[in-house]
Every structure is written in C-alpha cells, then in structure tokens.
Image (tube, rainbow, N blue to C red; front, top):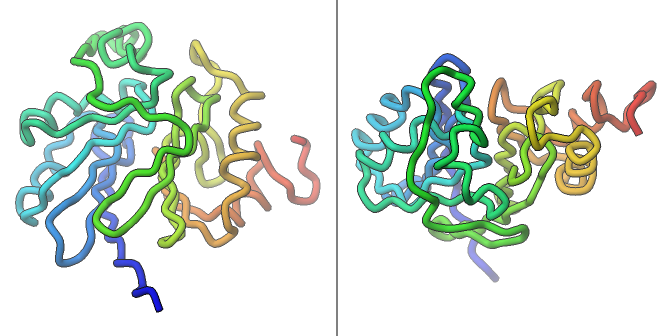
Length: 224
C-alpha cells in the first residue's frame, strides 16, 4: 500500500498596486519551497521565506506580464541561483518591456532570460508532490497553470478568476483561445480542484464551470 502524499502548505501574498497573488508553496517539516509569480513589492513574501527558514527551489511564472514579474529581480537578489521557470512561448518577454507590457507603466522592466522553459504536460516535483504544467494560452501566449492532482489544487495565473476570466484586450490575447483553454485544460480537472488565481479569492472548478458568467456550462450561459 502506497503511503499518502505529503500535505501542501500554501501562503498567499497580494503585494503592489495590482494586488497580484503570489504564492509560496512548501511541505510542513521540509525546507524546500516554490514561489509562484513575483509581482511588485515582494518584500513580505521574501521575508516570510527567510523567517520560516525555507529554501526556494524555483520561481515559477504563470506568465510574463509586468504585474507577475516585476519582483523577479528582488527574488533573484534575495535567493541567488534560484531558477526562473517560464513557458517557452514567452521566452523573450522578461527582457522586452513592450512584450511584458511594462513599457506602458512608465517604468520599463527588463531582466535576464528564464533558466528553464516550460512545455505543456511537463512534470515538476516539490518534495514528494508532482505538479503538471497545463498550457492555457489566451490571456497571454505562454500562460500556464500548475496542477497537483494529489492535493486537488491548481495555480492558474490570469486565465481564470472567481467569477471572471483574464483580460483579452492586450497584444497577443484572444478570447476564443482563452475560452478553449479554460474548457479543455481547466474545466476538465476534477470538480473539487481548488483554483488559486493571479488576482482575487480562490474558487473551485465546479463553481466556475457552473456559474462563471464568461465561460460557463450553467443554465442561461451565453458562451458555448
């Protein structure tokens, strides 16, 4: 009989002007951790990791818009050698203020390339937990979700929110592509999967599939 998987501890931070959700994932009793996204003003996230004695193994980016990457240089300075993971479709975005949209903020952001390029269905491991990379383009070409089946959790970036979806009016966005990603990559996850989005509160796959006003299978839905 296989032992049960270790528990996952999730600490959420929403720093900066866009209140971007950034997450620290760890396993109780173990030092290794991951960071998912690093928005503006990540000092509280960094301090949490340091005071808890955690050892970051990777910084995973759900996509490379400025509000999710502005804190990457600070994280790299605080934890030298931490590898940054980003989908291959956005491999050049960290260094390009026009692609990462920071050029429109008045404070262009440019930084070194990611250390690892992700692809759909890649497996990543944090301790004894396995996560699957789900490519969810639409809000951006390289948007991804990180899904852990054993813990029934998915970190979905700006693809899906509680009662909403990511914007599709930026360059490289497409509502049709995002809708397809949500229906085929996220709504096919188990109903009980807890969804941790890039902004706002957590939700579940069942709740969004039933009632999300933008992409829903519920009664009266105008989107099919």
